[in-house]
Image 1: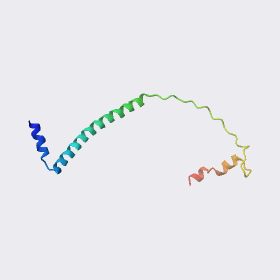
Image 2: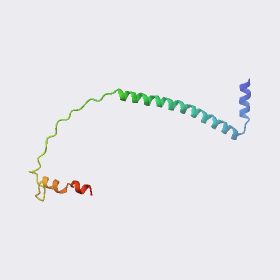
Image 3: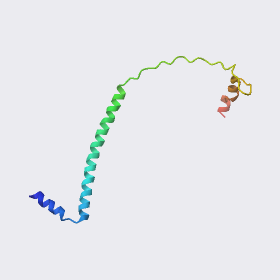
Image 4: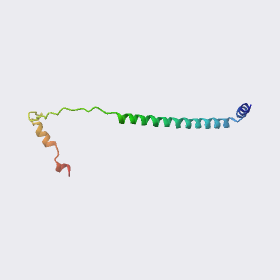
Length: 97
């Protein structure tokens, strides 16, 4: 019978107090659920981290790149590509200024 009396007491409260009680219950339940969500998220992220640590990636062997001979390549102004690279590439003295 105590529960029935408690429910009647809550029903007889003004609407403003009912809203305060409801909001308080929602906040408390939200904090409890947030706590459990945070703990499970931390465990899952640490499990992912452990899985990544134990994973070994295959090594990739790239073939040696051949050197390019640009002496025969010309530009529209009839300069060779090697001359353009030499004239447009700044020297160490220009970079350190």
